[in-house]
View 1 (cartoon, rainbow, N blue to C red):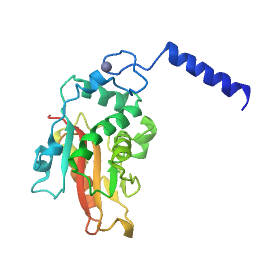
View 2: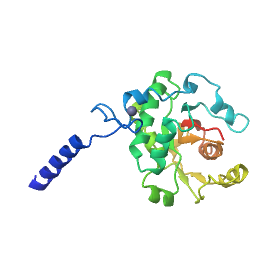
View 3: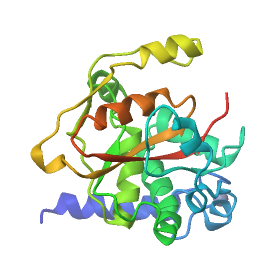
View 4: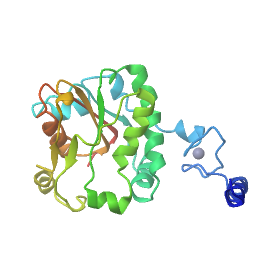
Length: 236
Ligand SMILES: [Zn+2]
């Protein structure tokens, strides 16, 4: 090892001492065992309890449209609350590790409930490559990484792809968004994907139209079963 890597590691250790990582919730320095958010703030992240109770608001959303095996939005979404701020950090402030952290946190509860215990592949809702280039990562993939680490289920980012670019959807009318979300995804499956159970993962569930497109596309795989997970459910 040359002298420079040693110096740069030393500089990093010094920087850690002088500027320890801060809790994204309350701004206090994090302990070594803490990641992104301190334990006191983690305790503020209220659960919906949907992973313990089906049918629930998420599974009901797809009734009469398509069949899902299991569905769950894990955390309560309180306006201006900590979860909303963390999801904002994840999506717009270049903090991919927040997605992994939230995915892991939810996964401990999911694991205890057994709701997704027979899932074969975790499928993050894909971002269009252009959007991926701008953000540098897919936030749903980061959440999926956290889930995968705790649930020991592999992530597959090749089987479901995004086909066309849609502009930022937030300003559009609900019906326009519905139209816009059609045919945006495509399943490119292999024989090994037949007869498997897929868990589609997204950050926040709003109208459900994006997830519905993904579910319908994944169901083109012979004998596929599909479940859905989002960190939160936002009410419009
Ligand atoms: Zn805190």
